[in-house]
Amino acid sequence: MDTILELNEQFVHVLSPMNKSKLVRLIEMSAISVVIEEDNHIAGFMLAFTQGVKYESINYEWFNENYDSFLYIDRIVVSEHFQGKRVASRLYKQALDLAAERSLSCVVAEIDIMPPNDPSLLFHQKMGFKEIQLLTHNENKVVSLQELIIS
View (cartoon, rainbow, N blue to C red):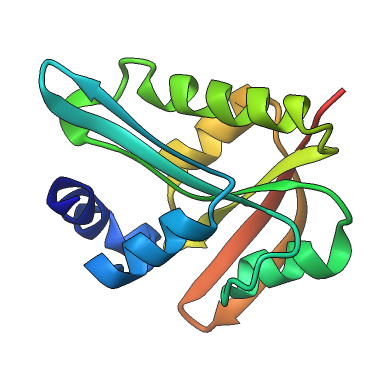
């Protein structure tokens, strides 16, 4: 659990801060929480929620108010050492499999535009995600709300 918190902290500029109690709470209410290990190291992790969860996130709340059925990727983090080694693709495969298994209409996520998270934008474009809305949190934070329709 400490390694997950350390990974989150490394990327906190494009995530939200998280302490141990918040991580435990998020895992408990998640539809899926996945950790991928490689060579006895945590390569990456993902937390995702379905609709109707009491999660205080402006991004999640937007999807919850505008969609009936979805899997929301709250956070996906890949260790710098494992980037470019398909860890994110493996995490997303598990999310897509769960969404299909539960007959959810789409997988949704937000990607920071300001400050920019260009690697995430490129990854989501390659996966087939489409921007549906820009959401301004404040003068320093703008996110792209994106969806991938499950067919």
